[in-house]
Length: 334
Image 1 (cartoon, rainbow, N blue to C red):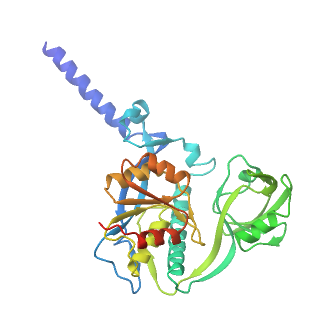
Image 2 (image 1 turned 180 degrees about the vertical axis):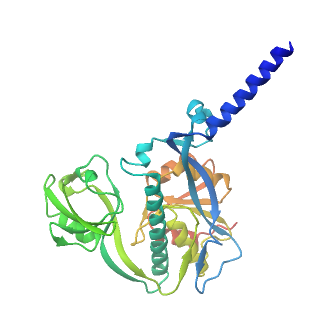
């Protein structure tokens, strides 16, 4: 009897050790987990600005990590709202986790500059912007350009004609027909390269040419005074809307009405709010932090957020100007 009891104890200990080992061993896929909504009050510094006593603006992040071997065996162990992402979706062939970390850090720095410029322009300050090309924000999958163009590239010429703005890029592409060969001069990693691809037809107009990329303005930005934003190791561009709202708050705009306002959305230099990923995880994070409202990009992002809101107020916006107007004119008080 004692021998059987000892054997059962040994088996139990072996099972615990195996579970611990499997939990510690990373697997091949990644997971997006809900993070927490965090206030920006101590993360944003504006020269001459002040932090109001009431209300807060929150950013919402997503925790990205590899799955564990134990989670691969028992998926029910994953937290609510977790999404499993195949490695190839997050790390295209030829890239590493270090490459991705560098890219998300660069995206964050750019998001901080753009949010500062957008907020100050909307508040009437003089912001100097010198255009330097069309920055590729994303590339449509399964189009010819996807083999030649990457997010982060800056398109500076089309068939030898210089382009300094997204508008100039669109004007040059519009001179072609769907299916035409096109040569793009691209600035990538400090080097200038030439790539050749073909145009495609616009989804809503078979006669209108596109190259299948979403672009924003690449530019040097000079602000009238210093603004410093530091989120530590958090990366990516999706906190841009929250940054701009916090800057406006510190410069005297009552964007919170004493409430806890969370926001997500990438900002373009013209103030447009661009769609971002991870809305399920971000909405759950905002909801569990008990914020009063969550501003998100309109369209599919807003629909996804509402499907996971469970009573949390979702406010869809197309631009920073709209977000600022809706918040400052709202009669809501908390």
